Length: 218
Ligand code: SAM
Image 1 (cartoon, rainbow, N blue to C red):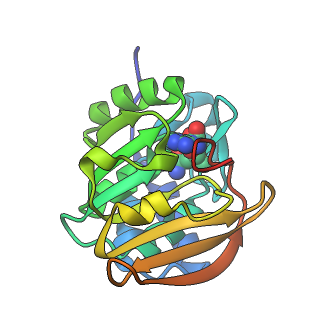
Image 2: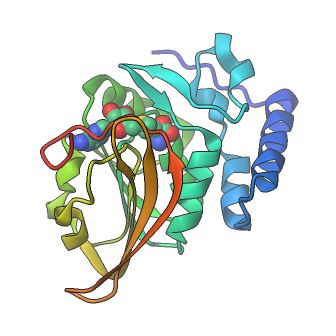
Image 3: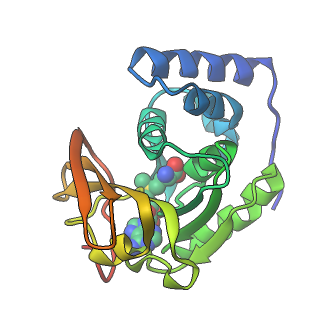
């Protein structure tokens, strides 16, 4: 498959303006803004739609799924407080855009996608762009026990509840960021694992994600 990867002044300028928009919308973490400023989001779009790539909107990527809105990616990334070398499990690779942002933040990323066509695309495109997470195909609602524990877990699809199995796969001091709600809207929830048995849960803003489909989900 031939990819067209050109990142010239037009795309760089649009990316800079996107970062300014996200800052105005309340994203404060400079490292997150810097990471968004580095990842060429237009590479995840067909060239016909490059003019849409730096708008703060979600966009269809096939298989009934979307590349997340940049604000949502920045919001979840900011909540994760990534430190260099953090071991992060991402559930719902999708286009791989959020994966690249996490890698730019210095995370060691394990990412899982249930849809084979999206998985096949990301395993080709991301390494071609120079991004090298560990890719997995399967139901991420159960996490990936073989590689646990993780410092952080991010879920990029809406879940009906917080799956216990994901909390078990966190290190003590680790953090889960997950949208929880019904199929229409979800609240962003963070769960900090304070000890093996204690958790601190915070419920934040409302979002609209595609559903997390699987054994421990819808
Ligand atoms: N953040 C991604 C991006 O920027 O492209 C978008 C993710 S998209 C909103 C959510 C993804 O989660 C979809 O690709 C969907 O197929 C995937 N998904 C849903 N349920 C899943 C599950 N149980 N395990 C793994 N992936 C799942």
